[in-house]
Image 1 (cartoon, rainbow, N blue to C red):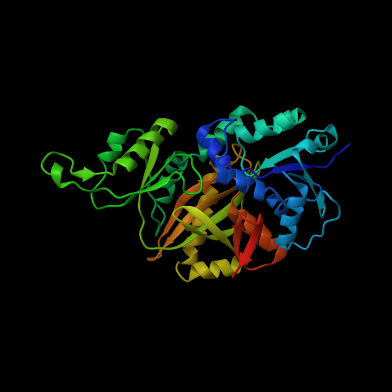
Image 2 (image 1 turned 90 degrees about the vertical axis):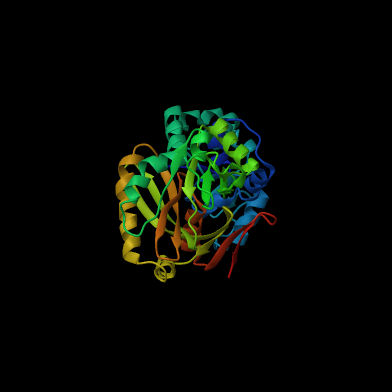
Length: 373
């Protein structure tokens, strides 16, 4: 009989897609399916001794762990240190299922929990209820952060943040100005897939006939399709002069929210490229070259204060907020709120365990995590 807490960890990078579709069964895009297989071993970075990690292939998972440089030698065919890998077939047996006391995914959603219970019905009592999952989905939507947090952050000095929700294309169109740039976002999306740059132009043919703003037909159709599928879109100004992408990582439980550390990362056109592995002190020094750190510390305190009453009791687990540093020293403190584990969390944990420094980059072709200068 197992009296200690044993978590089953699952890497489910399709989490954001699942939230958008609000479905427990769908076919993963090819790239996401490959990412899921290649990095299913990733939870070894943050798993506790005795935990289980669901993987497709144990030998491939062990190879991925070896390349991490975590200094933990394989002590058995299914183990890395004191963390055990299990395949779906293994999880289907009572021997393994009886050990598990909690399930922890990259993010919690209907598809993950349906998949787990399909493999092993005995785990159904550990699955969060529908109301909890509905809460997580609602709070993960960009409109939730825009309504609950943007007004609070707008009162802070040297902060720029603005987001408006539109459920009707005509209303959105009527707010656009020719020559200005905007960012349109789907309520739920991942890795830049649901984010579009919108650059309406001046339509001379419509001069003197009302609105003289032209929107590309492909962009217009994309916006209308998102509204039809997800109910609305978010419209934000395009903030020029970005110096750095960064974020703050947190952990929430029934007792409150704890700050975990800074995340400094690279992205291109919304697609994630890599995270910096370094000490918290050195990451602060990088930001201090461009922004007053007293402002950043005030922002951290404001986040902890505002989110404590909103998240505690409604969400348990890691979460992160992506931010943007502009060249004039201002901060956009709410580019994204991710109510799930993030690559920022992974970078913090990997550095803590290995003390490696450099840029952490996912290498799907080799199914490994590279650290480069």
